[in-house]
Image 1 (cartoon, one colour):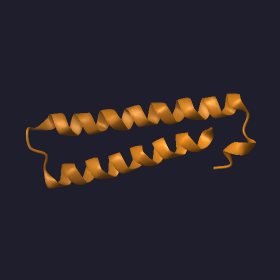
Image 2 (cartoon, helix red, strand yellow):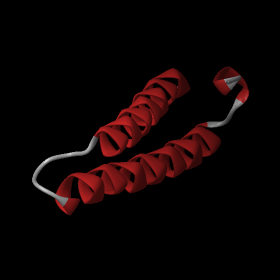
Image 3 (tube, one colour):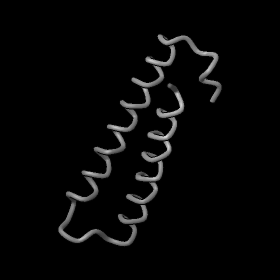
Image 4 (tube, one colour):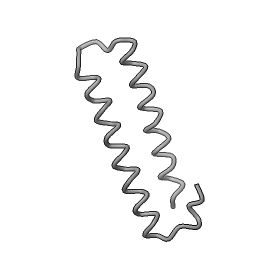
Length: 65
């Protein structure tokens, strides 16, 4: 990611952007789960993809500092 070459302000901006994306994905997962009592196989696959993206975003935020 090259975070070592960024200023603190640039890192903070990136962190805020990542956090916003994380929260949007988190909301997508919540909406899928709220659709029905039982999550379908397709919904579960979508949740798995979204949660994988969330994990990657989290790991990227940890590399910033």
